[in-house]
Length: 167
Image 1 (cartoon, rainbow, N blue to C red):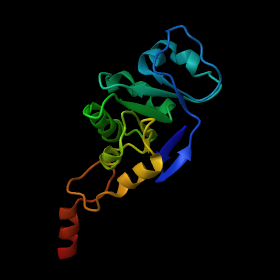
Image 2: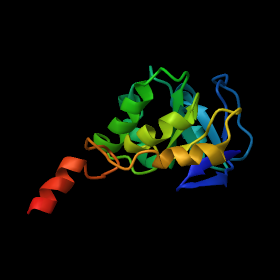
Image 3: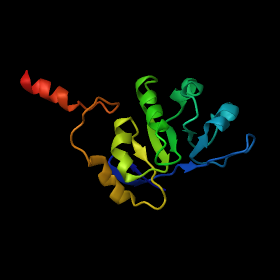
Image 4: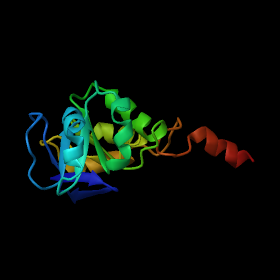
């Protein structure tokens, strides 16, 4: 699958499974699985041959995953539709409150118009909708050159730049 990561379109080995039976086994490989499956099968998944990531939907509580953050190199955040912004908040909380430094990936109804703002919230990789061109969407990361607010990306907002210029 192709994703946008580190300012480039890259091939990626992660495979996402949206739903699993609680006792269903996984083949070897790198899998993105639902939080509920992780909770039930965590000990078995820690012995899995390959990497395991967890996908959160907007209803999932980050506290339910906080004891596992150090075990996961990737957390996927589900955007079920363009107008559902709960995963923006989850990304920001993962970066700021939980100090998660692994990869945060946006999945689902991910469109070019969202990428800049997702990145500002701490999301650093993007799996676009199947019908969207990742090469075109990549341009969305640089649609704006001025930032008005502080965010998880650490970029200084314009008023801080102006303060520094005056000093």
